[in-house]
Each structure stands twice: as structure tokens, then as C-alpha cells.
Length: 227
Image 1: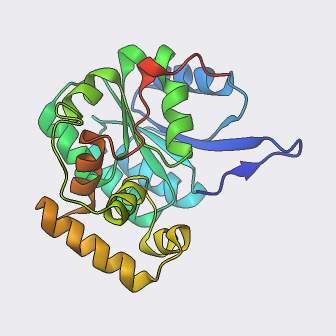
Image 2 (image 1 turned 90 degrees about the vertical axis):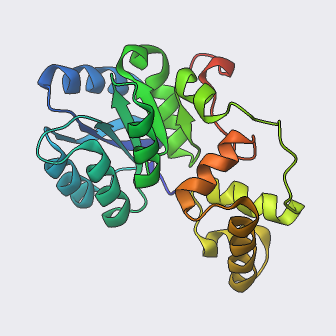
Image 3 (image 1 turned 135 degrees about the vertical axis):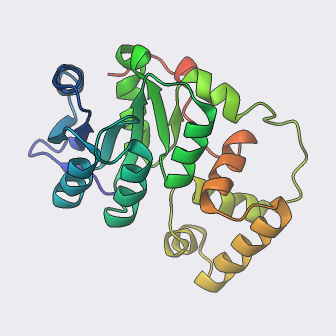
């Protein structure tokens, strides 16, 4: 992901906020813009508007409420990831629903923070997604990774490298450049990984990589306060 650079040379993370409550959007804006390096470029009051604003402004991170009118957070996530593929989606919700979380992951969300944890974790979540790394609030991380390190994976070192980069959001072409191999070789490795793991989707690969500690999952409990 290429972030904007302000005149002083500092990286700026461009953010879209989508929530149907004015007071929530105002609170999020205050928290984010009090932190240097974060800039809110658009706001939306429903899912349809969020999709439109994401396409219009191409933010680095879109913060979406799960429960929005007109178009819900799952469908908004899916459409934003298709129509603005460089925009990472962070779900910001009060609902703790395992089925919904799985659906959001499959739709392309790569972060989840509970509204109750916003003050402590929101900035770290935004910064993590802006670097192309997943971020889940501690409670969600524990569910996603109940067996981390418990299984021996039948993957070669190269396949593990490919899987890690897939989980970090790189395209096949970007993975090929990063590892110094051909696009065809990446595609072959990716097919082999799916076959070995019995996983058919990119969302499934991301979840598997997080579960087994292959992806660099940002853990809020292991990070100090953000600058």
C-alpha cells in the first residue's frame, strides 16, 4: 500500500469513517485526528454512501460499522474491496457474533475492533492495516488463533513465505517481485497451498495463516502506546 506523504515528509494515513450515528463519527474523527499521521478524508452515514465515498476518495483505511442502514457492513466491505482494492477495511462494532465475523473476513475485512475498545486500540488497528497487516481486538484474536503453533504444517518454506504474503494482502505479482520468482511459480505455490490446507478462498488462507502464526498478526496486548 502506498500512503500519502505530507509536505514535511511524514506519512499520512487517509481514512473513511462510516457509521449511522453522528456522535460516533465525531468521536472517531476526534480520536484519529488527535494522532499525527491520521487524516479523515470522508464520512458516511450508511453502507451505500460508504461505498460511494470509498470509490471517490480511495482511502487507505475504511472504518465501517457492522450494522449500517441501506447496505450492511458485510456487503459494504465486499463492494469496497472490489471497487477500491487498495482500501483496507476495519470493522468497528459493538456486536460479538462469530458468524458475522467469519462473513466479514470472507468479504475482505482485515481488522475488527469493538467500540468499547476504541480508545485503547483504534489507532494501532488503523496503523496496522495501513501497513498491510491484519489487526483484531484481543478477544477476536483468541478465537481466530486457538491452535496457533499446535499443528505441524505440511508446507515447504517457500509455500509458507507465499502464504504469509497472501495473508498480508499482496497480489500474486507483488509476491513474485518480493520473492524474486515468476508469477507462474507463485500461482503454482498458491494452488499447492490451497490443496494441502483444504482451503478454497483467499479469506480462508488469511484465517489459516493467522491461526498458525504464519501471518504477522498485530496483537494489541503486545504493543506499547502508539506515538
